[in-house]
Length: 245
Image (cartoon, rainbow, N blue to C red):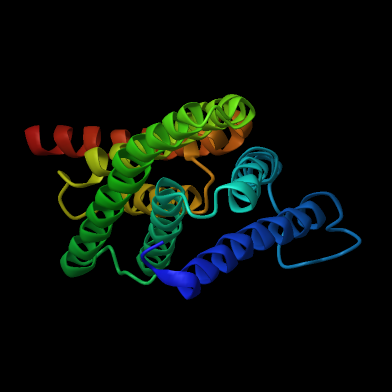
């Protein structure tokens, strides 16, 4: 209420705009996945991405936002959750796109890549970890104290599903940090290919397509990454043998 009528109106417009974008994205990805031969829109969308985005993420987000805007538009915890997640998505998307411009073969480019990894790690842990879990608890307890049983039950189901999704996103960001922050600048071609694959993989997570889920739904992608890792390990083994000789 402290932000006034204008601030509340802007929040509602932003929340509903996000719902509209999700609806458009579902329609667009449906055409790219199933009707691309008839409607060559942009590029084909992999089935795994369509399932995660349009069957899991977008419907869940829309089912949470619309009822809250209609019945609890002034709830502070709702504002904090919506603003923090959208703000985090913006930061991670822009920094993820910036990764593609970096020359990771150079020391300076690789150090910038590490900075982006840290930025995304901190952002995701804070918004999808701290803000989400603390404020979703406040939201559910508010429903309970108001005696709103329908919202409490539906909100609990949505909270569990979105919490699982957020945990997967946190795991993705943490795995990338654990893997690349301790490493020196890649020197072998196989290491460069592995890093490029990681950049693409992490950008899919920024687009709300966690790589863990795409590994399950798309075994081919997982097999490709495994092949790259085998090449990297083989090159390191050969280097170790040559040094001993």
